[in-house]
Length: 209
Image (cartoon, rainbow, N blue to C red; front, side, top):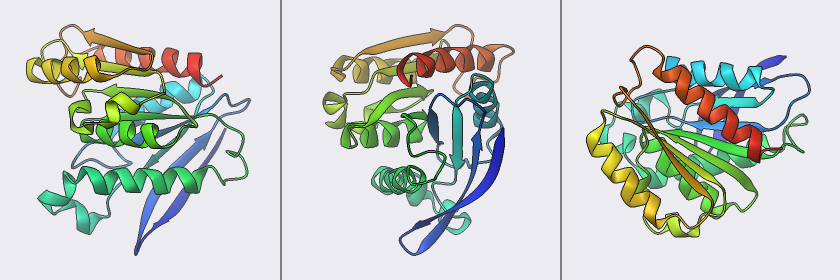
């Protein structure tokens, strides 16, 4: 398994990331975290480790710099983080060990909207998974999605369940919605993040082959 730090140029800033490539790799998943989070998010790192054990490469990276992340409006600038995910994707597919890998996105919270937006724009993206996401913020991009999309929501996250149901109805590609019973928005309850990781791993293994 190869693990390395990467620096992604994005306009006038540089975004830090961590790329992990297992042996006999089957695909690559880029993580788009939620507002106020980073490449060091323990929840996304947990999911990434499960994917790595399934021989899926992962890229966790900062959508915003530390300076940008302290600005409330910037944290929720879906257009900005969408463009950052496009930039990161175009950067990583040129990596010598990633050139031939099928690409998927794992998005959390607002990052899920960015993942859907980019997947709708880049036709080579093969799969999307949203964890406690806000796919409703993707608007018209939902109906343009071609990539199979899995929406995972906590059973006790009532507002987000309803928002995901509204988004789900607008998705015309292959899709599935999983509600993890007993989980709240951050999936902090015992065993719930393991369930998320298993669902995500199965989805990516199916569609990144």
